[in-house]
Length: 158
Image (tube, rainbow, N blue to C red; front, side, top):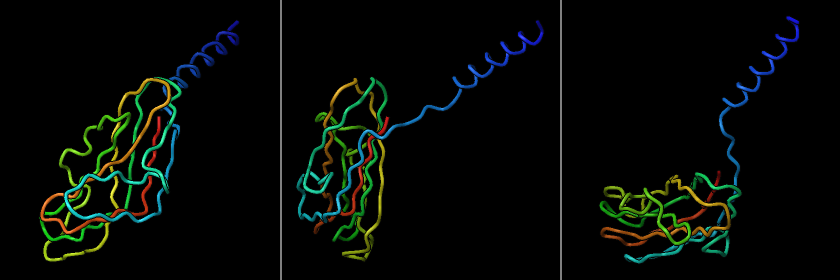
């Protein structure tokens, strides 16, 4: 009888331990764009999220929190005070904290056309199960001369 009781306690302990494991994230979308994208002026631009596409669809299997990470090499052909703002849009809604005047990259003092830097940002939002659209927007601010984005990656995970 004692052996049976020990087995039941062991099974119960395993069930409790399994419930305490961290949640596993699944990638719902991974998109890469190798095309360099250039523009000048204070103009909104839809960035390529996949070579040739400015918007992509992804499916969420169950309602819950979804994370969005955008990474790219960014370069400003500008001096101090210029910056590039990047925003993630899901179903045409801008995700917070992206695109609210936070610089994705900025010009460096005294170095017009300064070196490129690899930047990354992540935002999250609760989404219902189903198909959704994602796109990336950008705008140059300040005494701008131009900007470029290249070698970008977009990852959507739940």
